[in-house]
Image: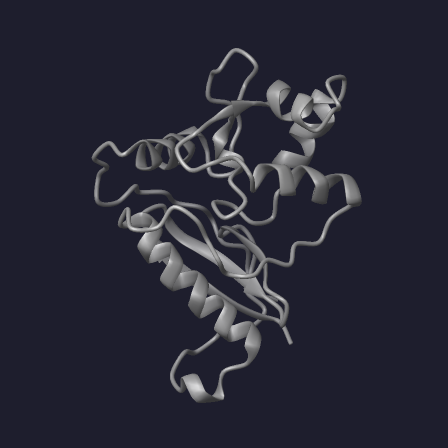
Length: 177
């Protein structure tokens, strides 16, 4: 069973999807939700629903500054190369950034910077797999699914500097099919 839900965050409304193994997707709302999870009776929830509940709790703690590491199980789908890159992203410590070149070198693929950047861009689980912690080779902020304003917000949050209560982000929703 797949469960999905919109989650309100300081970045705006985000989309979460989970299966019985863990979170499969988490990101900006750009697609429709197949099924809206109504969290009323926790005893009747599926394992997928529980993963989303756990994600929501851990995100609240992350955005309040009380959490640096996530424990909710993940279950992304991708190629073996993408999974390798996403596993490397998950090892970048809270509050630390690196460049695409450093990430490629850490993977022992110094000539594959563009491929590493491409896998980074296809990361289906933002924040928990911290693609926002990767910058351009010159250290500049570069592409992010939610835009550079959102990326900067996350990096500022992790730096320990005071952040605004809410970052207003508007993303159009696709019609529900």
